[in-house]
Length: 129
Image (cartoon, rainbow, N blue to C red; front, side):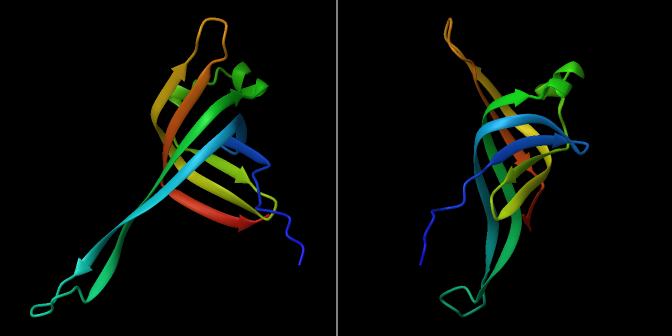
């Protein structure tokens, strides 16, 4: 058996209206779902659980706008309804209908600016590469 390791991301980018507008250096993703228990009279434990709404929260670090997006005047603060695309060797993951919830910048004099943008996505789609 030949183990080559875990699939890594080869390309991470933001897409708006089908056009790549920014590349992303790194990301973290967290998906959570609310669930409720179903109680029954006379039972000491729940009899079932019911899945609830799913939430996708992503944190992106170091975004670089494409040359075309810069020429078009891209402003991350104005972006709505865009997608985050993560290309891996064996599949592509797309978080769609994204809205930003937090944008932060940090820099020291003469240092690099470290941007962090937190997104909330409506959907997560996974397709074969």
